[in-house]
Image 1 (cartoon, rainbow, N blue to C red):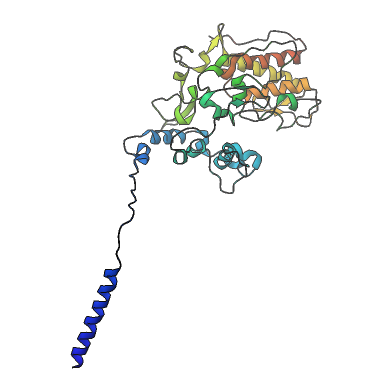
Image 2 (cartoon, helix red, strand yellow):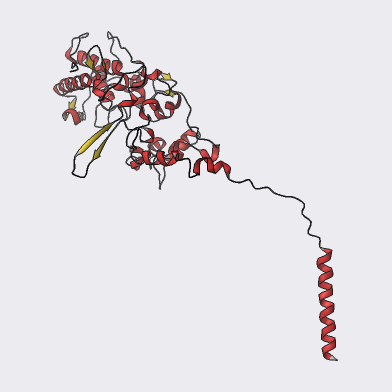
Length: 352
C-alpha cells in the first residue's frame, strides 16, 4: 500500500509540473539580426595586405622607433611626442602627459574603428605661429607638429639671451615648406620655391611608395642606411619621389636637384659653413657644424636673427630641398648682415 501511495504522489507531482510549464508560453516576440563582420574584413582579410605593408614601413620610421616619446610626460610636449597627447589635440581636449605613453602609430593619425574609414584625425590647414598658412591637403597633419613652435617676430626681439636651447624647435620642416618664420632683414628680397603647391604637400614625396619598406610609404623616410652582413652600408634613397612628371626628372641623388646650374644641397651646405664661421667669430656660436648657440650671451635682435636662421635651416635637415630659395635667402641675408655688407651676394657651390 505504501508503494502505491508513493507512486500516486509522484504521478500527481509530475502532473502539476506539466501543467505549470504548459501555462508558460515561451513565444518569440523579437528577432535580433546580427550582421556578419563584413566591414572588418574589408581591412583585416587575408586578401588586403596594405595594412601589413604600412606596418612594416612604420617599423622603419623615427615614429616607430619610439625615440621621441621620452617627452610624453610633459603636457607641453605630449601633444606631438606621444599618441595619447596628439589624439587629445585632434579632439580639442586638454593635453595631458601619460605615465604609459605610446609612440606615434596607426591610431594616432587614423581612427578606422570609430569613424569607419581611414580618414585623418587632423584636417586643420597648416599654419605657422607667425599666422602664415597654406592648405597642404593630407600634409596638414604633418605640419601640426613639424614646425618651429615659436613666432620669430615675438621670439627674436629686444636683446635676446642665447642658450643651448635657444631658437626654434627641432622639426621646422612645415615652416620652411610654407616659406615663413625666418628672420627677414630689411633691404633683402626673399623668394620662395613653390613646393607647398604640390598636392598634399609633405605626403606627396615622403609617402611615395617604393619596392621596399625602408623609404617612402609609412616610413616617411627619404633615405635610409641599410647595413649588410659584412658591415657595408648601403644608402637607399627615394629619388623617385622627385622624378614624378612636372618635377625634377630622373635623378640618382638629391644633390642633383638645383637651378641655374647650382646644386641646392651643396650650395646650402656651403652657406651653412660660411655662416657658422662668422657666428663663431662673433662669439655667438660654438662647436662648428654640430654645435649650438653660445650660452649666456646677450645680443641684438639682428645678430640673434642670424643664429635663428642658421638653426631654421640646420634643423630642417633637407639641406634646402623643402624650399631652396627661401632657405638660401635666410642664410645669405644672415651672412650679409654679419659681414656688414647688406646687400651682398654670397658664394654657393656649383653642381658638378
